[in-house]
Image 1 (cartoon, helix red, strand yellow):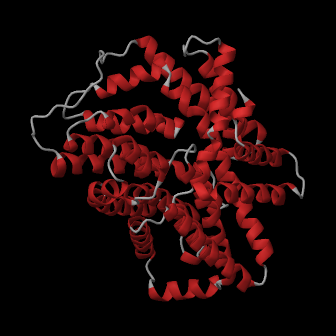
Image 2: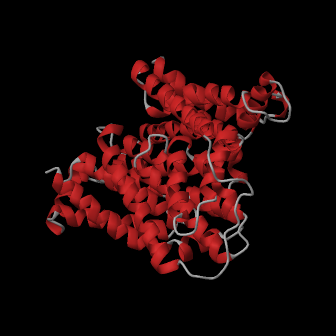
Image 3: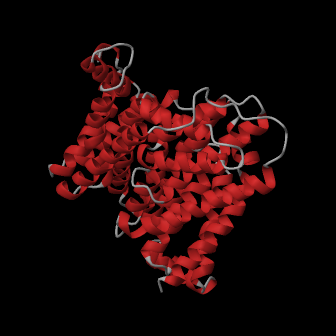
Amino acid sequence: MNADRISKTAWLYFSISLLTILEAFVKLSWLAPFTSVVIVLFVVIEFKYIPRRQRIAGIILAILGIVGAIWSGHWDTVLFDAIARSRTFLLLFFAVSWLQFPANHSPSLQAVRTAILNQQSGRRFLFLAYGVHVLASILNLAGLSLFSTAAREQKDSYLKRRVAMALIQGFTSASCWSPFYVGMIVVLVAIPTLKWSDVAPSGAVLAMALIMTGWLYDRFAVRQDTGTSLTRAPTKSDLSALEISRAMLILGLLIIFVMAVLELAGVSIPIALGLVSPPFAIIWFSFTKFQSRSPIQRGMYLAGKVVGGLPSLRNEAMVFVAANILGLGVASAVPTSDLSSAISQIIPWADARIFLLFTIFVMCGFIGLHPVIVILFISSVLPPEALGLRDWIVGVVYLGCWGLCTMISPFSGTTLFMSRETGVPAHVIAWKWASRPTIFQSFVLFQVTIIIRHMTL
């Protein structure tokens, strides 16, 4: 790792991650405020490199939150708390960044990728969606990037659309239950009374429903007999037992190590990932054959590449800081008890409130609002008790809506990533390709959520 080539803001982001981990074990009153200052410094320095639309949106959200904080009379406490809350999410992005490069260069995972891409027509959509779902549920964006070239390689626009939508739906559906996703972390932070185990089983049901409805829509509303065949990987599709075993070993070890740290250290999921992902990724990558380097050189190369690339997370930092300021700032100025009474009178049925939540999320996603903004805002202004709903069912709704919103928002990380990979504008993917199936899926997920709720009453 060549420290001279790593920018100052990369070290700032690295410091944010280390300070966040340190705070989980050392209780010092100055750590959270100091970390908040470092976060602000990082965003300010990287601000000019953030896309113009996201800069404008971030400024508007932050101003609204600041006005609310000032109105409450406790602006300093509210702002520091809001910025400090974002450090958990920034740590998660840091942890996930370590896994992307070794995943893309793993022979075992590449073999799994090839086998899935070479499936026969008629079942390829499901194999793609479920393949991405399983890998991404553990490797996060690394699981999606492993398959993204499949969409980029398609010359036919019709096939490009189908492949891209299979990948997007497989990836976003994992956010309904996976502890390795920022969506789950946002929900657990927004509803502190929840644990991952409280919502994961129901979230997994929503994930399966999302993939199956996406497949049904593709099969009956999109699929055509054009005579154009999918561009496939040029190798055989049969997986050897050794390749399967290696892939399962890699994923299994990562899960075991993260869960062990969770149980033994009693820390949150982002902290566990922040502790496990860097050494795991370095050891993993050191065993791959990359540019004829020695294992130590490969490990140092990966560390330099990951740390040096941390400034690219500036967009995520801006969005999450602004969303937290908006949520806590407005919530500090809004009388929640009055809103709770008004909602009970206007919408007396619990199922109707759940339908309203789904509708709000889909509409906000369509106009480009990231779900983190909606979740942090609603949860701050209207906690589960104010909605008259149990905390776990609200958490399940949020998780289901997270996947829906990221598919139809042209500004979500998923849509922007797929746009870069396919060369198709983000608004085309979100508003033309994903809008209709997402509306269909939102109704299905609403019905599934209602069934789950009534089965547990």
